[in-house]
Image (cartoon, rainbow, N blue to C red):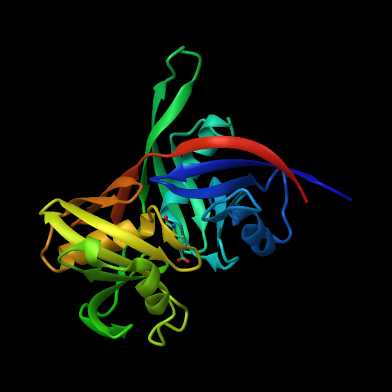
Length: 275
Ligand SMILES: N[C@@H](CCC[C@H](N)C(=O)O)C(=O)O
């Protein structure tokens, strides 16, 4: 029997996912549908699929699937978009929302303002408590395509390799990204961030995401980047990470050791699909 699934296309700094409220529209084969719906010409076109579900330990749960159908443990940009989704759809009236993810419970702080016609409140910005980073090697020598890079390995629930470069425009991301993502040093693959320092509180970053390729932004990647920058004494505790799709502000709190990510979330359109 054909089923109709309602979805919302949203993005955070240009990192775009298809969001489905799986409490209303249960989905049995998200891996398959993420591949199908993410396809730019034959599907909706996106970096992946996000399911918003119920939770016994938090207000809501999130499952995130990359465009290749692989499931990730965490997604920074999607967590902000879910904050906007659940508040604006009236699924909650809380401005502090907890979200169960495969990498633990994250807390979202929503900033809202009245819409221009004064009829309701909209979410303008979300700050996510991303938890504490797990720091791996800080000077990993790695070869890809005949070039040697030095990277810092940081997990923000999912794996990241952060590489400092002098001039980010010189990086051939489509060529080197897949080599590093699938490097034998990373049996579970990795997300890859190239970073150029602009000032003590601003960096430029481009990302190659595990399972999705080049994306306009990566929230966990921005956090990993800021952590690597601070670890190496390149930036202050708060850093603006400017990606192809826009900036995120990342603060690595000295006292708690936690990383806080702040940025916007945008609804693009809604639709329905038959499965
Ligand atoms: N874009 C995301 C991360 C999505 C998952 C990642 N590609 C992985 O496989 O670990 C973000 O905003 O954090």
